[in-house]
Structures are given as C-alpha cells and as structure tokens.
Length: 61
Image 1 (tube, one colour):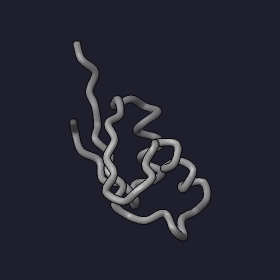
Image 2 (cartoon, helix red, strand yellow; image 1 turned 180 degrees about the vertical axis):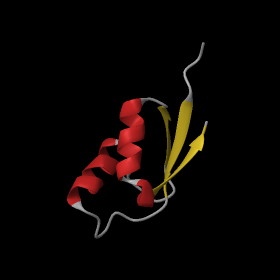
Image 3 (tube, helix red, strand yellow; image 1 turned 90 degrees about the horizontal axis):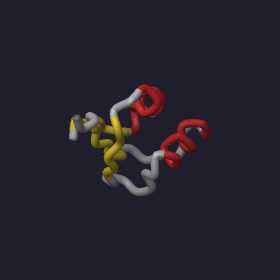
Image 4 (spheres, helix red, strand yellow; image 1 turned 30 degrees about the vertical axis):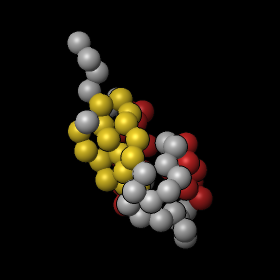
C-alpha cells in the first residue's frame, strides 16, 4: 500500500525567523516563497512541520 504524502508550501518569508526554524525550512528544501515539496507523512516530518507551522501550509497530496 502506498504511503500517505503531504504537500508543503512555504507561505511566509524566513527573514527575521529564529535561526533554528530557518534551518528546519532549509532542510526541508524550501528556498523560495510559494515553493512546494511533497514529503511522506511520518513522525519525523510531522515534528518538523509542527516547529515551522507559521511559515508553511500543509495539505494532503
């Protein structure tokens, strides 16, 4: 069975963000506003997205 996926879009600039949050967003591969990436819906991804929730929009893919 296929693993569930989530679509993550960067919707807020990281200028002025806490350096830790900026590194999390960079590690997710989000560099420009409105850039979208697809990730597996697992505990590690959910933890990272919870930390940077004000900066990203998450949808089911």
